Image (cartoon, rainbow, N blue to C red; front, side, top):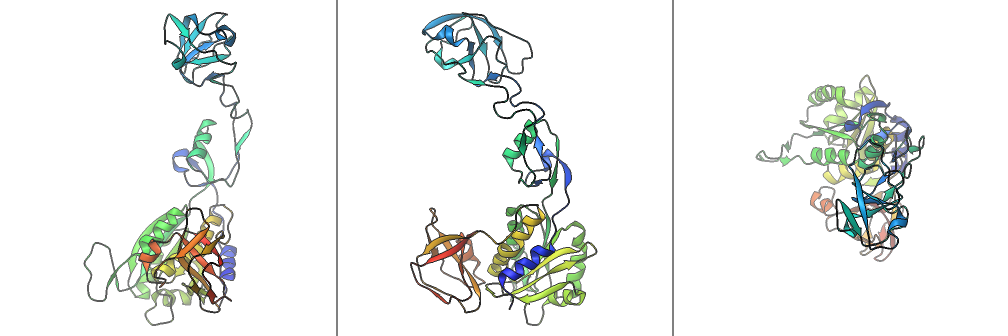
Length: 396
């Protein structure tokens, strides 16, 4: 059998980082930045008020309480040049430019909120409630570097530098296909020998959680020709294809039967539990990577976490490799078959110090997986782990 590490290494050596493209900011969420972003101006571009209140000279309110004449109002967005002299105040709104001569803002809560005159009840230090020009970013400063995953805050700073479009590596487009004559769409009645399809929903959601664009293409029967037709139809919109089922050693394995003659997809036994039967390769004129995962629900999900997720990270231009491991103390004894790396489902405590295996470790037991938040890793050479031992876990 092939090792887990060797299988992942082959996958990462095959998949390629997606080419960058320029997107409007509204479409850039979840993509990976492919260029440096710098600010052409200081941010903020001018001294402005951090609060609603009164712009003053701090020396004029040092002996508060004091009353000052209010000589002007400055709303946010004002472009007029204003100034104050000694002994005066200007009413100012949050974000409005600080008038020349002022060095502090008195919050309105520290005053009587007057409009002609204002009583200031507390002194303020120089710079109080003032946002200085360039306090956040200096002109020409790089605010984001290539390889940054773009979230809400990153979108905000890109927009804040005046950019409307940005060069990014797009979210991988991933088509998910489930195979099996026994599969029925959720919501439809079950016939004899049938089950509702869960894998395509699980895997499509996992793709989206991993930062890809998941497209659920539904289910395909056990006919290899029908599977190939469906696959061909989906390749036009796919950077990656994931299938589940049809890759084991028995009869009626449509994925294996359909793809083996192509010579571009290898079907192997990987030394892991669950998820031993694995297939990976490329299909179509564009050499689209295809992951053919086992059909048992837990097996397909664990396979996704170990192999597909790292591949999607590489395609997105992010660091890729095995999932991060964390150490915790296991609260129950574990067993594992010799020669296979086991990935047992568990519940990791909030503080990350202890982990409890869930009840139900079968590769078909999706309910147990749904109650877990981690995978407990038992190495190939270990068959028994005593309660209280230190183990490695993968958060899911």
